[in-house]
Image (cartoon, rainbow, N blue to C red; front, top):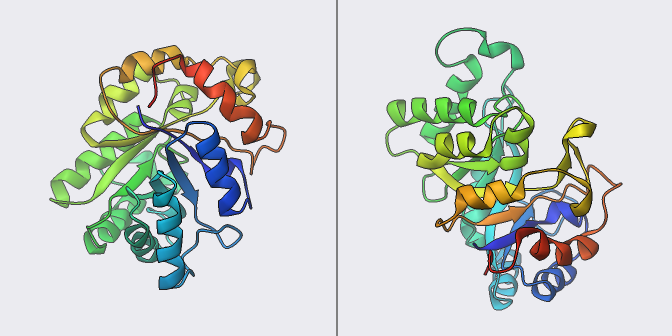
Length: 260
């Protein structure tokens, strides 16, 4: 598997530090958090984008995703197209988006009002870069994301939406990893993982302190080549150890020979 990490785990770190973390720990991919306080954001000039892409490619790394905070189902205007343009300029595999639907919208049969807004956004969006819909917030289970993507397949033929499977998230919402994988597989593009403790309401914890079934995830993904990305949420959970402490332990957690 191609192994990467999200820069959410090193908030505000300069590019040089991120490249050193990846190269020094045998990680080959990055999810770049796109925000004004990071080195990746939609305000970068064309020259800055070319330089950023070149620096990452010269380091032998691949950009798994530009991690936006676009909410595909939200009422408010969303900056989807600028993030797709940024991802295209950087050569990223796609743009991470959240569902962001109103929790009260999923009470009737058929697409919710938010999902209909998402259909409209997808219909009008550029299709040269995949939109990576994460199992998150209003659509935290693979079942919910797969149901929406099935509607997209019918209503927006040729759409560019793929699934980003946050495996720890679906697991914390009661699905087995095998169930989630089977549901998402027709659209799956990228797999995230993290450590969590189910005895503490699935609180993110250090690699050696949780009970996320990583062996089960590796068994489910055996024989596939999906990019596998560590989503270390240090930005939101400052109690976690740093990436510098965590990355060396990840290879042991995954087991020898599981990554390349």
